[in-house]
Image (cartoon, rainbow, N blue to C red; front, side, top):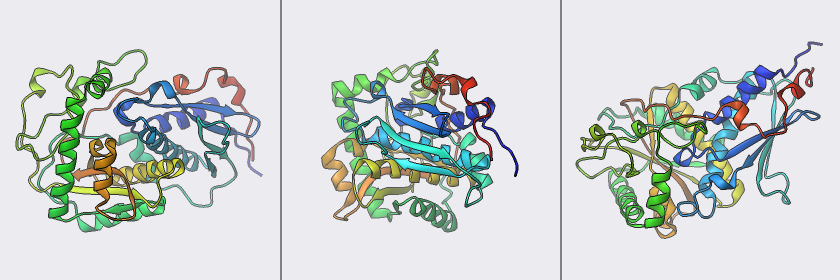
Amino acid sequence: MSSTVLDVPTLETLIAASVAAPSIHNTQPWRFRLDPDTVTLEIRAVAERGLRHTDPSGRALHISVGCALFNLRVAVTHHGWEPVTRRLPRPDEPDLLATVRLAGTPRFSAAPELYDALWRRRSSRFPFSDRPVPASVLTELTEATHAEGAVLDLPGPAQTDRLLRLTREAEQRNTADTGRAVESRRWVHPPDAQSLGMPPEAIGPQDFRERIPVRDFGAHRHPTELAARPFEKRPSIAVLSTLHDRRADWLRAGEALERLLLVATSHGVRASLLHQALEWPDLREQLADGRREHAQMVLRLGYGRQGPASPRRSARQALEQGTPPTAVSGVLAR
């Protein structure tokens, strides 16, 4: 019987893999706690990093945590354990969104390309080329989404135009809404000790054709980024949805989103998240276009410049205070 311990470097690697996930406005609305007795990692929501105007229901917060949860599952499997996952495990603790217990040998081997991709994945708000994403890659992205309990719709040209119109209307509303505009600007700033928010260089240009509505955070842009640039003429748009619209579905949507993003990254495909229409209930309902599914994310996929890395909090910063790193040394053996 081999012996394996969860040492401090491995614990920190698991947390670092989790916080490499995307989150709305790079708010990183999560914190982690280790229960050394059961070797279980808890992921809790950080309410003060929620977006009161943009995300009053907390749906986007749950999706962000779902992305981090998927990364944690991938990293735990990569290091040779089975990630026994429970979502919303304690109704009396609503901030506890998920737990992952490190169990024995994993039932399925980790896909090396996913673990590698989670360190390389970047959101891109820059123009893509007109090179189409191959049908085989789109099929793999659809299968990745389905594996996590979600649905991926790949609309045709007419439907794509409709989705972009809804996103553009949402972007115009966001710009005109004082509360949302101020909230958005607050998360754009040079990296600081907290490593939250987005550096100005991560905010891309606008489409001079005004066809693709990339979010305009409207603050602290470098002058060279103010000029509009040509974006792709025929964007590849995808809509990720779930059959229900409960908190557990939001978490699942985040896991499905991150799996899709990692598979895309492994194929060299860039992704831009067009979340604006999901922030307005009436526009979000129109995204479904009469289908029973609930839209959770709109994505733009293609080939182009990789976006710069947004800062991340360190593993020690993300671990809940009172979780001494030395407490985990030697607690897990099998």
